[in-house]
Length: 136
Image (cartoon, rainbow, N blue to C red; front, top):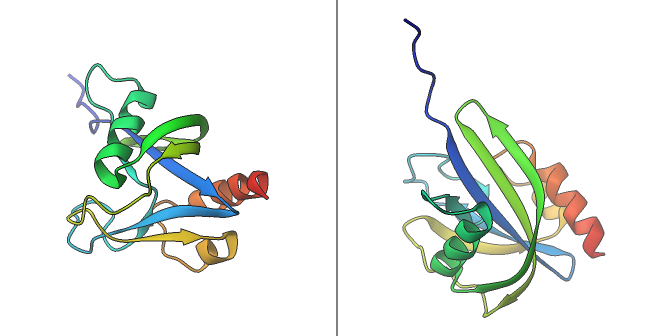
């Protein structure tokens, strides 16, 4: 009898892009997973949700914004993770940190800013550079 592998987590993240910058959230040092690194806001896909529905819910919960327009922008896969990244080009509301237990800072960053930050995923700098080139 084989051993089951680790559970796979379906996760979404939103790259809010405006004016050549992307909004990043610094994960609290107290977080169990990926502590003290910069990440895109988002979270787990709940049972019965599509990735887009999860993104809309997560960004409302974490940032207080309503997503008006988004499109799939990339996929980050690991043994126990499938992260779908969406480019968010349109939203209603000003992003504010509504999840201080998860994030201790929000910051609008350029491509150059991202290079110097400790990021949650090694693929982020290249992915974000591509998204920001499209915004230039």
